[in-house]
Length: 179
Image (tube, rainbow, N blue to C red; front, side, top):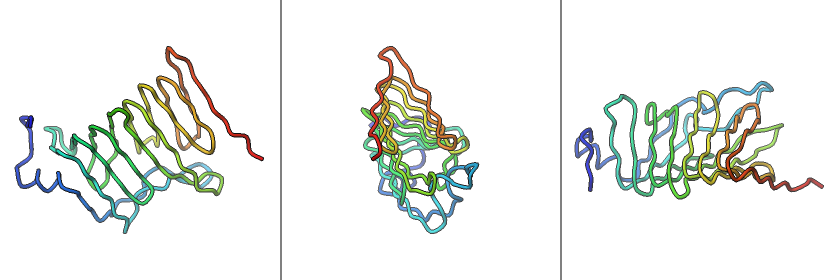
């Protein structure tokens, strides 16, 4: 196994590479939406589980890398990837960068008073809590409320429900009309 120069001590590494179950005491993820709705996320009393084959801290503070079958599970979050980096406190990450073939993200959000699930797949996914946005690159697919968009790159602003997509292969949109 390759061990970066900046690996954490063996005891801490062993703790992180096992399934980590943390009592989540962070504020809910996401920012308040203009109409009072918000992205559902981590909240007090939630439990998350992080699993990977390897984990190590970066030289930069509050940065932890994972490799090998990374998976984060929470009440209304699911992330999976070959590799992942979490920025911010482990119990309150600000940004998650996922890479894989494909990397996956699934989040639940409240929109117009209804619970909706956002599902994304791509070679690289970046989720930023501060802007409540998802960037997908490389064979990207994003689904929400019966609609799916596929493109090389997709940018999605969750709060504004705005999307931008493009790439050399163009954009493919699938829509399921409501009855």
